[in-house]
Image 1 (spheres, rainbow, N blue to C red):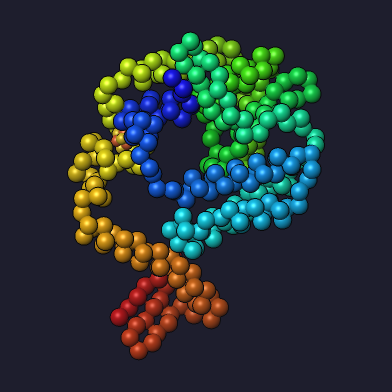
Image 2: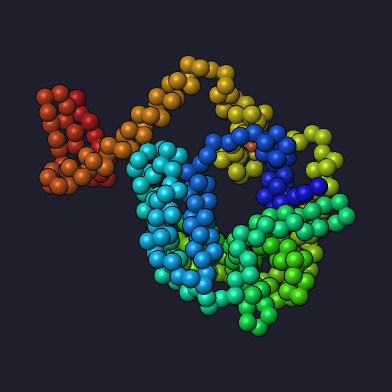
Length: 303
Ligand code: SF4
């Protein structure tokens, strides 16, 4: 079978989630943070593909703007905040980037390499550079806000899988550097893997691929990521906690209206704050209503 790091990781975490994602391929709603991460990656790739030519910074900003989809976000305000956050990341990336200096051998490199006589490992690597002294550097762009620790990076299995793939594609690559490039922080953190660690991950992935092939049950396995699982409404472990959205039209309508109302509040609140700040007031009244804000800038409505 063909297996990626993400499939391996999903099955390890929860076989049922694997079944929903990879076998039944149930469609999931687009999430703002996933859309955002993917578009920032595309913008960086757009720049890297021009290397050794240095495009104008404005070209990257225009690329980001054209591809932006505000409807994915829960409100105009959220979309705007993400957009500004993205522009800042691209600005930092651009300021640090010196095209032509590095020997980039591949960007968005899709790989399929044999793991055993039965299994193939597949995936996508953001960027691979060849360094002057013969080493290879794998660079994985990250849009995380939080920085992982060095220990977490030193034990990251996805990086070990990338290492395995690169050594399979370029057998002369004995010295492989693994770099995570955190765009928000403009920080690169590098790690390496020993040959025994590569063998270890290879064995683990083969074992999981064998398990998947023989799996009949695909039982749910509760884990710390359940709260973010897209299939909670289908999961027997969540019964009673999550209602199947297909089954109750009334509550669906109420929830839709509630979400719309929340979005409207998110869009309007900054305008109220702006008015209060401009007029240097903390209370506003008309015939029907008085609005104030407390010391934490929370808006309070008094009838
Ligand atoms: S909610 Fe948790 S246990 Fe249920 S399918 Fe998702 S990850 Fe698995």
